[in-house]
Image (cartoon, rainbow, N blue to C red; front, side, top):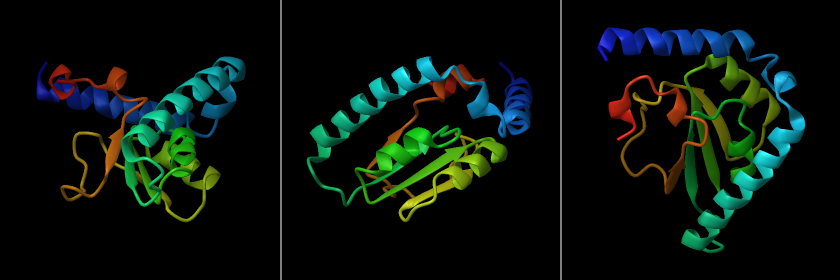
Length: 139
């Protein structure tokens, strides 16, 4: 895939999610989403607890955070979480819905994160891999 094609796809994804960000949560099948959310949240929190124990002095990064539901849930077990998403619209919705100390959101493409090395103790990407336009980013 050419770089131009990958950039075109990223731009279209950003525009799509910016366009639906305000109604995204309303369009989700809540029964399926709630089941998926609980199952995924339990798995992630279990992995974090297994690795870090009860240490809440950890910081994490959620790449492709969307409306921030998982980022906020995971923030319950750690000192700080930052959620990033290519869509500034989704980030705005996340920021409005989940305001608390130690939790923040920023618009950023996943392949151009601007954080120094070793900023985070862990990172997650629950809603990201199926959106990557360039298969080399998955490897």
